[in-house]
Amino acid sequence: MTQLNRLQLQAFRNAENLSCRLSSGMNLFIGDNAAGKTSLIEAIWLLATGRSFRSRQITHLIQHQHTETVIFAELQSHLEPQQTYRIGMQRSVQKMTLRLNGENVRAQSEIAQQLPVQLLTPESHRLLEEGPKARRQFIDWGCFYQFPEFISLWRQHKRLLKQRNHALKKRLPAMQIQLWDAQLVETSLQIDQLRRQYLEFLMPFIEQYCQALMPELEQAINSSYRAGWPKSAESLQQLMHDNLHNDIQKGHTQYGAHRADVRFKFGTFEALQALSRGQQKLFVCALMLAQAQLHQQVTNEPSIMLIDDLPAELDHFHRDKLMQLLSDLKIQHIVTSTAQDLIPITNPKNAQAWQIENGVLKPLQI
Ligand SMILES: Nc1ncnc2c1ncn2[C@@H]1O[C@H](COP(=O)(O)OP(=O)(O)O)[C@@H](O)[C@H]1O
Ligand SMILES: [Mg+2]
Image (cartoon, rainbow, N blue to C red; front, side, top):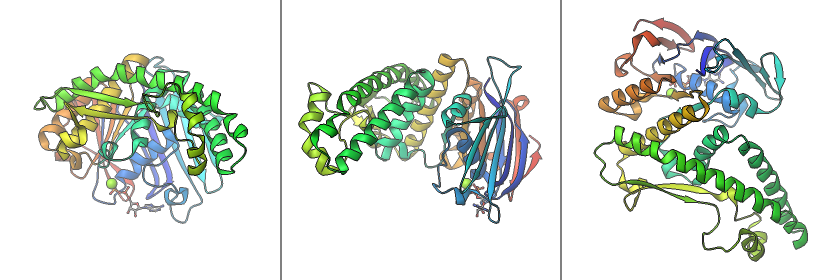
């Protein structure tokens, strides 16, 4: 299975030199406030995605008084259990180096391909509240792993969009702006098709996990997907053509795959209206579990679930339920909490726990 065998952090936030061997099931990190729990989750997420979920500035991540940080992980694949991958990221203010099995790697996506991680934090319910970007990222996570062609389409779209937006901002002649339209339409349509397909695959799993976590909900869940341009439009190309003046005024391209969104509804109500705060958190858990299960079915490689500050998310009953569902999925999960007794260990044979204090780990009995 895809699992982290080993993790090592050097000069990452408050961890001077942290190292651990992880179990293939549950990995629990217990610590008081400011012990370094979120930093540990953040480091794994950074290694996998190239981004932090709480800071855009690399200087925040490098330990004070240091000039660089190193994150290293050893990974094992489910398909080839004898094969291990060594992944390293070294970052200073000026430079980032990525390595895979001793070789330099240029694209973060090569690392992401080997390290499919999912993230739940106390802020995850924002997925429902905030703008469409987070929901696009949610869908695109799945498309990236499910459809090998997705990443190049997405990159191409981003590049074309940048060029068209540049032309709009510079107020170049219409012809030079419209130069990009045909290709942008093409990438938009292709990305749209993959996103729709992914969502169609995913919905039954979302239903199943909503039922498991919130059996009290009576209304059926359904999704409403928006492509990034109005359904009523006859063709995207025509729409872009007709909207040129508006685009010039705004200085960016208003229609296309970069504007897609997906909303979830229970009965006729948007998730945000239909669900209590607690249920919203559970719903986001259901989304992640659904993705994990579909991912495993399609790729035969389980994903890895990172859960920061689990008790802040859920009550006792739902914590147990979530841990049980994760254990049933047989995916590696890395969980942080302020107290050990808040987290049930469903399968002690496949679990490990540590105390974390000031960025230093001590093994705990479970
Ligand atoms: N660049 C840094 N260098 C040194 N310490 C840092 C750095 N960034 C954050 N910290 C400290 O690391 C500690 C751990 O924070 P965090 O991981 O959020 O803890 P927890 O999630 O356990 O509450 C905090 O005390 C914070 O001040
Ligand atoms: Mg924290």
